[in-house]
Image 1 (cartoon, rainbow, N blue to C red):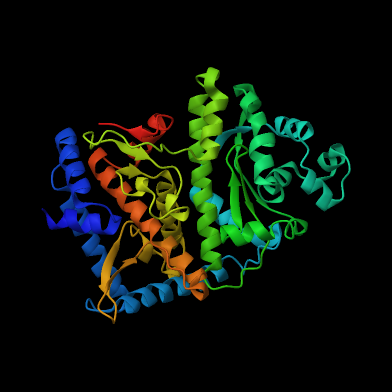
Image 2: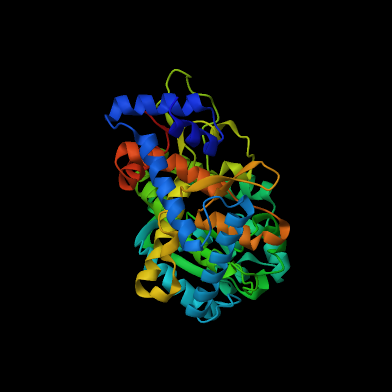
Length: 417
């Protein structure tokens, strides 16, 4: 078997026959030959280029390459911290420069989102008891009058019990119609400091203080001072990522509005992050699952991670990383171009004990590893998911075609050839 296929399978932690049979079938369908070889040749060129830029020799140990990447992103983090006027992100004013740069770079435009008056109606129908108690409100009308609705909806994610959210509050979404949505811009929010105490458990679970509301078109930052090395780049990258993610789901919502009869059902499926959980026929080797979330965060041995699939999350990160690299076009002294096109790049390096370990050159893997360095957590799954996407894009003709096929087949759950 071709060495390139074996190398790709090793990175993806899947069987080499899975990759080999998939590539053979995709070659028959598309007429494109030697894609695995092309992908790995590009990987090797970018690895060599990166190591040269880092001043690391090709025979370096695993920890030497890893630490050089960590040092690089730490330096980049310090430079953008200064560029963004030392953002504190404890309030909107302190985070404004960072948010403005993110919105300008992502340039995602308007989307199709839930109307504010409908959001208020949902709150009135099922008042968030825990939030009202925490803020000292006895009547839902008082909360609606005095609080920002976007911030209340954000707080639902961390201030109420999951069972109540799913079985009571979100159950109302079954009655949503196309008329409950409108076109408007994506909004960026930094939550008021009063939400921080309520959000403590959420922060422990999520490892970061940025999240989003797809249905409302809102991205929110829980106010925390940026003290840890890598935090500025992480927050900036997450906001860019969520801008692209929210925009992607807005495209889906717009598409689903064309068939109003099952509009709410499809919206709910998107918000749940549904992924097919059934094995497809083994002889159909050219079916690509659509995996709309990072399953490795839940179970790194989930069978769907080893089956052919595309991952929209990784696509949003690819766009975010391109935004970060594009910032360098305006401010060359930032030296951010290093990370351009490294999302799918990685290589195995030997440890001092003689074991080969994978090193990801992916920006967000490196940033997350830096932020979590004290907990000795290393990230690889962004790179691995980007590799699945890279294979798919090479066969279908690029990122735009991958996104088109993903949107068109999203509710079906897979792309067939």
